[in-house]
Image 1: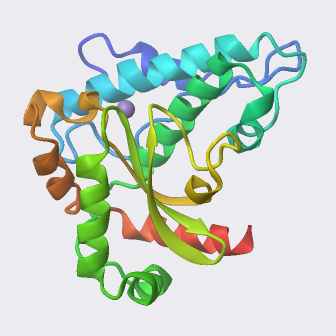
Image 2 (image 1 turned 60 degrees about the vertical axis):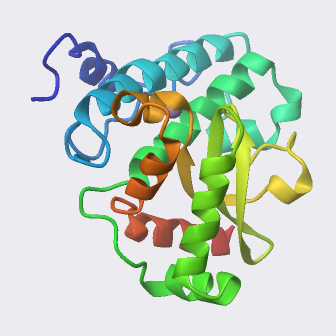
Length: 229
Ligand code: MN3
């Protein structure tokens, strides 16, 4: 059912070669690793369609447009964000929007939810006492962050830490205060566009529902990359 209703441009965009003649790189809108309705009933199909094919596609297009002002495009978004202080607001804001959403889709799965296992379960127990404590603190951060932004679990100097960022800021950015910086292990989008169609102003219900779809396998993969970084 994906691709109905005028969304056909998204997959064809994703198939384009990402190297331009000028030697500049174009970042592609990643395809979702599941169908738009796969996260029902926790996140509805319509929200996912608009969020991916309009919001994320918009950040992607604006990011690429802003990057065309540069003589050479850095290879990774992480590299750009880690040096955010050297780039324009258009590059940083849209690059953040690009990467934050790219991660967010992977942090969710129709097969997700439940208790974490493996190294992340051990690290959560070590740094938060129990999974229940962690869930409570992460949920509180996501529910109380004022205005648009994201809640994060990050790896910071060998420890897990919960933070929030505003707008499209990402923990890789060198423009953030030191205590908000780290390697992202999990995020949740708390912009209204992430939940308003289904939950209206009830951000708390969306955050509570999120635990049913967290892709702990991917969080473990991130943790393994963080320890190597
Ligand atoms: Mn969003």
